[in-house]
Structures are given as structure tokens and as C-alpha cells.
Image (cartoon, rainbow, N blue to C red; front, side, top):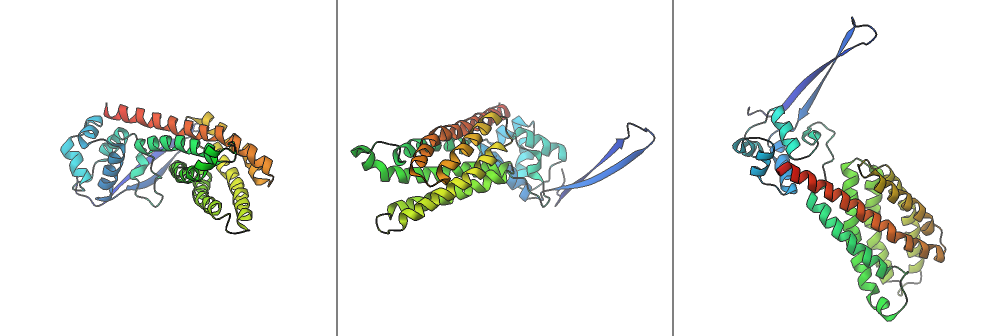
Amino acid sequence: MQNAVSMPYKISLKYLSLKNNEHTFEKTFTTYFMKQPELGNKISAIRNQMGITQKELSEAGSIDIRTLQRIESGEVTPRLSTLRLIAEALSTDFSVFNGNEKKAAGFVSTDMLFYLFITGIVCLFSWILFSPIGPKNVFFLSVNLLAGIIYTVTGVFFYYGFYLIGKMRENWFMQYSSLVIMISMPFFLLWVLIATEFSFAKLVMQLIVILTGINSVVFGIGLLKAGSRFVQLYRSAGILQLLIAPFFIIPIPVLSIVGCWLTIPFILLLIAIVYSEYRESKDRLVAAVG
């Protein structure tokens, strides 16, 4: 171990031509990792997000606990081999410790995925009560406003999860379309609340619905481009989202109703995606500490 301020390492690769073994060429590149104490803080933050102790991490990575404590506190800079063991024990990409200008995108914690899963279920039921697909009886009318508020709050948090997933995987379509959805949902609820006060409120609401429909195309593309072992779930959700979008873009009331119905299986697919990601993340965590 060394008390160094930076941790550069140089890797030299030599490639042999298959056509002519007499010719070789060398390519050298240098990668710099985070300086201390930033590196130690990063390791500590990831460990805390995963909900594991220093002892559990040291055992999972076969690292002396005192060494790990000194690394996290910024007292020493770990060797490259030690840093690789830490990354493997944390089930995270080695590049998260990269100190170059292009930063790693990070990850979504297991706890966050679990909360997103629960939030998605609440979001689904509140959507059924809030959207115009329910019968116009006393019960539905009495809970409509409350359901709208719950749907908006849970929906913003739920799509925040897909914003994080998009950021983690550098999927700009998913990331920024999720952000637009998070912004548009409170605006739509606001105009629902003041619809009786202003004559033009319904027109604004319709405009928000159309813009949301257009943004849904971008979100659908993001789902189709998602790199994950659950590619079939992402693709199914992406295709369904692209099919739903025209029902909201075309300003015909009956089409909007159909779109609202189709949104139910779409949200179910999103919930299935989050649950699958949660299970995979939990399995990695169990493997890391077990």
C-alpha cells in the first residue's frame, strides 16, 4: 500500500499479425483512477447503498478489514489487484472507480429497486381509479381526485427509477423521456384541478396528453434499446408503448380511452421489469456477501 494522491497505471498491449509473424505493433494507453479520499468515499457509498458492512465486504473480497477501513477513510491508496477484488465483491463495474473525464454512470441499489416495485403496484391501481376507464358511479367519482394525487406522486417516483436505469446504462432515450414524464405528470394533475376555473384548461390538458404521447415514442425506443438480460421484457414494453402512443397523439376521445386501457398491461410490464432487475440485484448481493 502507498499513500499516493493519484493512481495511474499503464497497460501495454502487443498485437501479432496473423499474416506475418515478423511484424508487431504496440499500443499503450494510460488510465487514471480516482484520487483519495474520493476513491474511498466512492467505495463506502456503493457499499452503504448495497446495505453491507465493511466486515461483509472484506470477507466477500478476501481483503483484510483493517486494510479496507484505511482505504475507505482515504489513508491509503489500494493496489490495482485489491481494487479489482473490491469491485467484484460489490458486484459493480470496475470502471466506476475511473477518474478520467468520462465518469461511470453508477447503478441502482437493490433497496431502490424494491421501493420502485412497490411504488409501481400502487401506481397501477391508482391509474385504474384515476383514468377515465372506470364506471361513472359514486365510488369512482369520490376517489378520483385522491387517486389522481397518488398516481402522480407514485408515478413520478416510479419513472424516476427508469431515469436512473437509463442513466446507469447510458440510454439517453430512456433517461430524458423519463424526465419529461416526471415533469408532465404534475402539470397534468394541476390542470385537472383548475379545469373548472378556466375555459382553456381542457385545451391545455389535451395538449399535455398529445405531447406525452409523442414523448412516449421516445420512451418506447429507449425500452427497445435497453441493454439487459431481460431484453424480452424490455422489448415487449417498448413495442406496446409504441403501439399506445398514437392513441394519445391523435386528439379523438375514444382513442384516448383505448390508450388508457392499453396502459394497464404496459404498466404491468414495467413492474415486471423492475421486479426482475430487483431479483437479479438481490441475487448478486447475496452472492457477494455469502
